[in-house]
Length: 314
Image: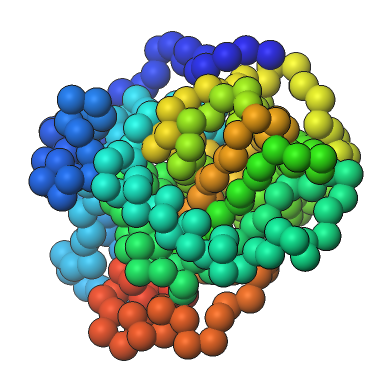
């Protein structure tokens, strides 16, 4: 097992063309980050959507200001993950914590909760329908723009959930797993590779007491195997992270990963996932009646309508 990032040398900086520029001004002005602690570079990508049979090919352009360098995007492609420390700070981080705590109190009754020898801990789903803070989060450009840089500008929300684990008699951890379990053997000639970008947003310091996250670089590209059944123990070449609150691990949905047990302090995290617009939403959870997204769609722009699965199909 190794700690922190592996180095990926000789990255092709021409993989994505773009002009590098400072992209943190708007986030600093909103009071969400401290520019002394969180450094971010952006570059622009111009897409043209070829879905209208236009004669002149002069329309349907979309600009994406990706909150990552071409080198970072190349690492994400090769290794399957990208670490962004302290992406959420100050007031924004406090808002996310408070919203999670409020929903946890409303939906989880610890006295009535059935415990087992081992579990993943409580999982809250459809957060974007339950609190305005989360509805706003699904359009948070430091994450959404990277998803667009990796999968194109027409995306849908696959899900927004929270997993809360805490120490106790029940061991709360997660074995090695993937989020898009659809690969097949033998591989059909026209099989569509499943892609998603999952942002693991850690609202508390990630350390041995809270339970580290472990992943296997490059495993998202393995098409002929799946993670071992209920594998909680280390695998060869896995890496782990001890990172401060507000940090984000961006990863491909098929990257093999697990979490260590929470043994000393509570661990709150969010999982924000995007896929190309023609894929389905995650099947887990039940959409609440009269959720916030219903009202938001009444005056939604094209991006939000695509993210919520109303538009974006061929």
